[in-house]
Length: 216
Image (tube, rainbow, N blue to C red; front, side, top):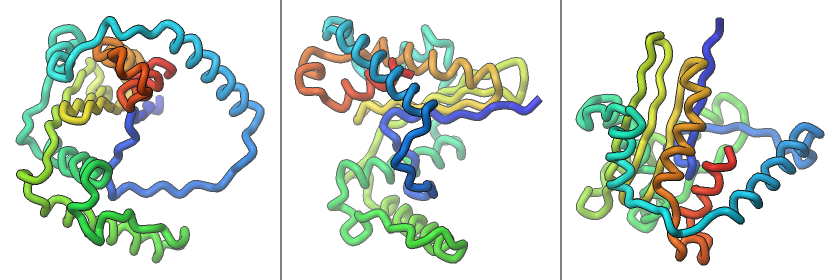
């Protein structure tokens, strides 16, 4: 049986070396329209129920992930965690402190879908990543933690990444059961994280991420 794979990212951060080639489709299919209507209805229902009474800090979320969600934190010095840290740090640097990158702050355009153009694009992205990693941590850094949930099947795994300085929660999964568990795990973490009354009134990024997570 073919195992499923899924990536869940609230803020959409996926590192500057990722490539997405999309066709421009302005007209939605009937199925897409239905899902859009369903999403909007769910969003309005959730927005009416939200209060700023229950919320926690990102440090609280770290403890909640281990003590209540049964996640195990990976060694922050491991190759796997360090590689993801590099990607996330570069992405956040581009988003929050692009002025530190100078001419490399602008994401390189993908000129065409031809193999040569894609390879050139990837090389530019890799150079952008190198420049980002060269920025001293004293000027910009993140606090990233990576957690996993393992299953009896060695091909099953659920990953959760939590970054405390910018309030990022993301994750991925491989294997049918882990994929099914991923949305519920994200909802559980975001419900615990919650939003403040100020987040609600100002429609902050935390509020928007919270809504998106609960609408999954």
